[in-house]
Length: 268
Image: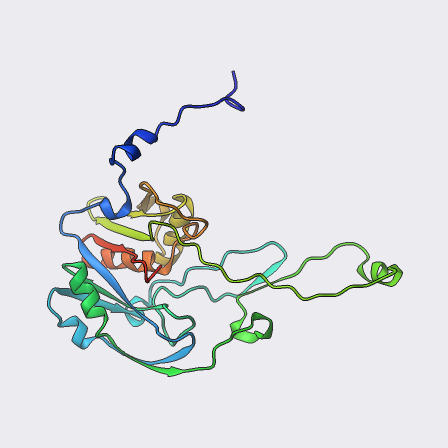
């Protein structure tokens, strides 16, 4: 008996059609703290100062974390690429020193409600020194290069020398946005009795998030459990976790309370 080529009945349709699917925003936890991020309005700037005093004392706020508070959390690594050279830089969980794209997380606000967290995130006082943005990857050099890649085989010079005609061109891949119906999100719960960090996240698989969390938090993967609930689309955008998921997990470890973040459409 083989399952290859056989039509198989779908097991998941009933719960979706009857409204019983459970996406990340549907998940709850006792004592949960809601998270919101203060984000960079600049595509490239030096971070002169981050002052979270006003946000920390705002109504309902439990705490505010900045890059300086997460010095023990390692940047998310860039994926290795065959025949490529990858910089040993990674993606910081919260920006430190500089920001390199619009929307980069600078501070994490934790509050008793999502509204309180969002209100406080707006009053995190960040002083930026704008820097020239890099608009063409071909002009990148030095620290701006994250990955470079090339591949060739055979007698390249000989093939060109013997060709009847040589045509050259420069090609680029346009930018695109993966915009699933459900944005990203995470619910992190620390269980001190078992020293277990449980992270529910909207992802395409549990394996890559587990590896990334273990790396950034310097935590044994046996002490992390990743749970993927029903997912409302991804299109590749949820293959690797974003820095927000690591920040939420780090906050749950520090607070000893569940922390939840649900990406809104503007963030997505």
